[in-house]
Image (cartoon, rainbow, N blue to C red; front, side, top):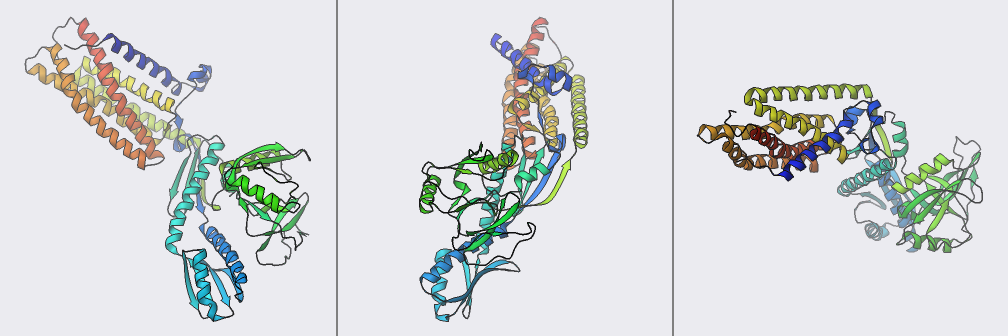
Length: 532
């Protein structure tokens, strides 16, 4: 006989009631939603195509990273050439059709083998060619391809941290091709704010100021003045109130913002202006800062952010605690954004916006209406089929199906999952899957009744013998959903989540709620015979 324990009665009803309670906020109007208690004021998060938002495609500037690495190799090579007293007429990084390369013109051709070994010792991934006394070196293409993957992956992580800092829910960040990243931010119709946060490399570096050269004031702030040239030194702009000064800083940086573990907005005690206090990690950053402040005590040291000098203060004391402060003519908004960028981390390469568009809420509303209509139609057709095929038992399946949908929305709300158009497709598919188990059980019951078994015993046999098939089919669906979630991204993951939840919930409603309804009906029917 079909047996349902009191405990199963209690927990089945409790789960269905709680599921309905947490699903209701997703279906009520905004006015009703505002009146709900705080613990119920949660709804299903909508994806970009449903809620509207911004879509930005970014290109990682890999050439600038390659050139920066080559500049570093040139600086190191120049030092070694002088140390070994090897004469040269020119050493520089020059652009060419397929990128940039290092060119070295030696005065003595006999020094070529030594310089070749020197270059390969500095960077093993260089491809070196020789023409007389001229050496050309480029970073190998295989290394650059591998390097590009790493840079793009690091950029994606930094972008994700930056957007999370702004409180955005469920952004979609995808790699596209070799050097492009797609960022979709639901709810942000204007992409200007996103570009403002993502478009900065926030590369903080610390450089010694060359004492032999003087800072030069720009007469016209919009025009760069004529600046003297010196190997290993570059002039970078610094805003000082109403004027722009070009400060001679050494190209080789001594410390980077990667060692920063925290950055907070503070007030500068001397000026009363907003400032950013930064804390360096205890492993490397604090030690280097102590060494630098000792070495350059009483001397200028420039803090450079994205190619501009933020400040070039004089070390007044040795910084042993790993803490420093960036001061400048910051507004509170600028200081807050700088602190955010430094906390999120430095982008390994500049990003260029190659495409941007906004998805309006009206388009999202149309998608929601279409998805809602499709789901309702699926529900109605499935309900009519079940009622026409199985009568009262089909009605039990329809009640179970309604509970299935409510529980699915409750789970999406509690998990904070994002509902996308493919997710709606997953819900429609779950409706068919939810009654599939009932169809298997009911057909098995019919077979048992035809074989002459009493109806009440046939119900128990139907559940027992169909269970293995139902569990196996749902487990295979779960495996497919897990694979989609693991290897997919964005909307594909949304489909996988609804598919997996639908499979799990359908097993619960089939073996708990539908079974409970049939048990109640058979008891009230007095265990009389019935047809299905």
